[in-house]
Image (spheres, rainbow, N blue to C red):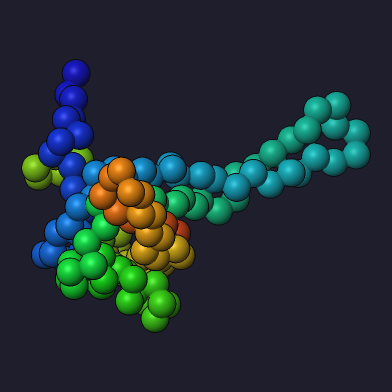
Length: 141
């Protein structure tokens, strides 16, 4: 069994590390169910519809000086930009990213839907979180 230690995970945007991140979550690939039940059926009948790459959340320590990471993500969110160079590492060399190698590449990206949600606590360092909606196909490389 191949295991991955969380300490080797990280979030990068292009070649820049998103500083301070300590947790990221992909909520998983979902497929819409289409109800095709007709009169006379005794049980509900379904077909598969569109796939959905899901949602990404990541959080960690707030660093307002991280211009190429945290601040760049905030700018991408407020400018409603498609982020195609987000890398979610599970080890030193393996990561999830938008699949830019197929014909659907232009439709594969992340949209930052909640940027720089900051929490300050007198007994801890400031925390920050981001949420992104994933579009298209994301792959483990």
